[in-house]
Structure formats: C-alpha cells, structure tokens
Image (cartoon, helix red, strand yellow):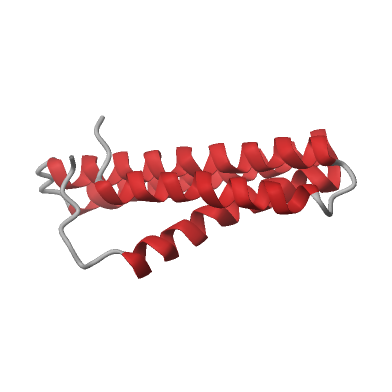
Length: 131
C-alpha cells in the first residue's frame, strides 16, 4: 500500500520528534534503558496508527458503499483498532517497564501529535494525492 505525502511526512516527523525526545530525556531520566525502549515503542505504535488510519481512509474512499451503515461500521472498526492498540501498548509499558517505560511511551505517542501539528503549520494547502 502506498502512503499519502501527508502520512509520509507525519511518519518522518514522528521519527524526528521521538529522537529529539529520546535525546533530551536521556539527560534527565534515571532508568535510561526502559525510557529508550518506551520511546521506541511509542514511536512504533504511532507509526502503526498512522498506517492503520491511512488504510481505513483509503478503504472508505476507494470503495463505493451504498449503505451508510457499512461505512459507519468500517469507521468504527478503524477507531476501535487504533484505541485498542494504544491501550495494549500503554498497559504493556506499565507492566513490563514501569514508570519510565510509560513516560517514554508517552513521549513516542506525543511525537505523533507534534508531527501532525508541524505538518499542518509548515505545508501549504495542497492535495494529498497518494504518491
């Protein structure tokens, strides 16, 4: 599956903001290993969520669904998948890595939001054709 230019930009932003958060955090965090693993886990989860979102949108826009109920169910499936992924990753981070793993996972997750904001601020209003 090909990703749109926006999705590619958000993924690159996630990687950049996660790396920045990792570097800054390593100076302040006492448990650097779990923090670093958490940042990587949060970044990986964020990238996976972008890919799932992209696939959901592509599936909904490419198909010709006559039934509104089918479209709503497909949208709910995408939402549910992303939320369940988030819950599983955060619970796993807490149980396996403790507080600093959770903080690192949060940093990796916030990178997605920061990346989306940066993409919105620094790109022109252009078409998001799939490249």
